[in-house]
Length: 391
Image 1 (cartoon, rainbow, N blue to C red):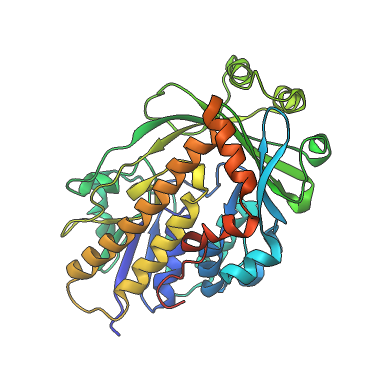
Image 2 (image 1 turned 120 degrees about the horizontal axis):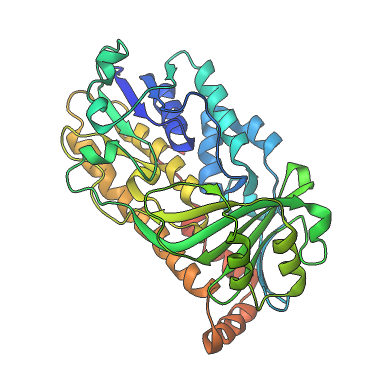
């Protein structure tokens, strides 16, 4: 196998996973990051088996076991009455059914373990505090004294500069949804949830997801509401009047949940943008992965998982290929776009179901209550049971 030099733009979860996957195959990897130091925004994330399987294959199994909490169930609950609608078993059931664990953890912990592995790998070099615009990307190898790039990977998020170099790549659009992220002490939530589970509270045009962090001491919460397009921006501290807007959106919810929302510490206000289907690569351009390629709303909790899959699959596709990568990248793009499209459709279905109103909500609850938990799990086999190439 002939090693090539890979330049990755962005040192988030997707970029670092991609770096490890290429380095594992013998390629030299330079990761270029605009931030002077790495800090992950957002308290937590769900790591489904399709992603944990890849992280384990990259040698992160021990670190993952230490940092990840394995919930007993994913529970769907009425946000108005607190009545349990249905659940999907997790824990040992998930590991047995899908061949890898399902868990929740701090985003910062996942990024830290990936970063430590990248720094320790002899084939990886990390370049922080690098000003990056679309015009700079082609000059990066010369600027950093690199031998040239056999492949440039754009892993620089929803506002990607690398995307501007891909002809036909779509532009981000506001999804119409806002995520309010915050953490509370576990003891303050015991009247409304079981702290060993992932709980999705469903409501009219709103929902709230809660799951444990820090060995169960805190509960990570993400409240999703409708909102207005704020323009090109990222996560921010909540605005002075924002909490009242949030409480208005949850006006008909159970009083105990409203109390948690009212008394919660300062939240992060996160407008949700998505990148519709389109080109991720053209001959001579970077190849896009993760949010740079296909940012999606969190209704299927697959944003990080799809970026992890992208990076691993891309490295596997390029393994052993010498010379021009155009045909390889075209095949990769076609395959991944099909899977991303299916994950995006699942997210759209969940959004419809989670935010249902009136008769549709009543019908949803009845249908879900009649389904056995194992039947609901079977509907996720294509997603959670997915095995990336070579696994």
